[in-house]
Image 1 (spheres, one colour):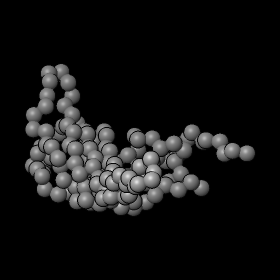
Image 2 (cartoon, helix red, strand yellow):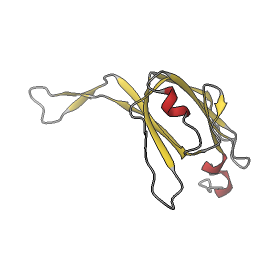
Image 3 (cartoon, rainbow, N blue to C red):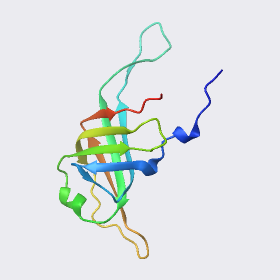
Image 4 (cartoon, helix red, strand yellow):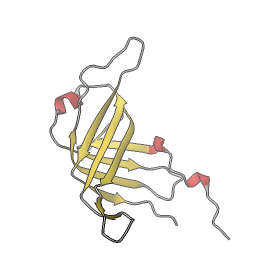
Length: 138
């Protein structure tokens, strides 16, 4: 018999935390990081199929949050480290991922509109990552 999904085990992003250089960023409301592989096309004589060879990988992400301080402006394009933590108490466990050698791609200097809460987004790239604590089903 197929295993039935226990919906309570789905991770809730509200339990996520972001630390930059060890400091909790309580103003963050969204964080993403992805790995992308550069695949090379391999086309050979006698075949009508394209095959693929693994190439280099690269990582990029984004941190969004409410504008509280000028810290990201002051950080500029200097490297920093991000540690994310997803600790939903109903999940099978918690997950921590370390992003190493992060560098901002773009820094928002001015972005406001009357009557709106001010948010800022900082897209970045990173040199490497480490899955510090994986979530594993019981």
